[in-house]
Length: 317
Image (tube, helix red, strand yellow):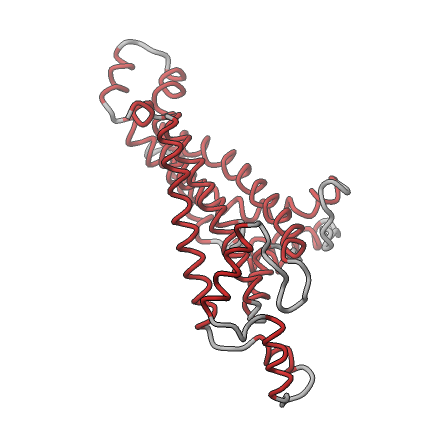
């Protein structure tokens, strides 16, 4: 087991290095110049001397390989530098927004799992009945409904029916838990519903496949209780593909909710991504991509460990 864990940890290093190389050189290929954008607000034309001085201050006058080595040395020391646009430390730019996105992703995941697993199991057990049809309609509607549109519906419903609008200014959980939950529960419900639709369909498909296996028929022939068959044999084996879907969706939520964040006035990592790319803020964009890549790698690593826990064949191998 420890060899398996060590192997997975060592595989993270070349993956992160590959991401770093790609994002660094791709950002330099994207059209646009952050220096020209900064001076565009002052006048339509800026003197070449001022542009050269600003490029030298930001280190953009150095050879590309030297810029890359400097950036990688900073990452090795957990120093992502400062934002080229605001001049603030990147850690400070990301810290509060990462906390917001992480809390929203966790809340949406909890809502999705609470909805998806019971509904998927019931739909598989009641295949081709009205219960199964209801769950399938529920999940298909979730797949077809964008989370940002559902968020707009929530806001209009609260405003028209209850004459109440959710807080539009973010309050950290450690400052005021009640205000924090009043604001984030609605985007979490909107995102979690769509999230649950994917997981519900996967749970139903996996359960149907497992329930047709020979060992399930044998357990039933021995007279085991249905609840025992589901909990000890069927559900545990059906969770492998469901776990993959849930984990990947969680990693996506950390930086992919741009429109939903705009609807609920949330300044999370998704909005920060858009702003950094629009401003050609190389250092901030690179740090955000590395952060999201690290989240995906850690989530996949955790899923691999859970695979080994759920399936003894992986541990023994």
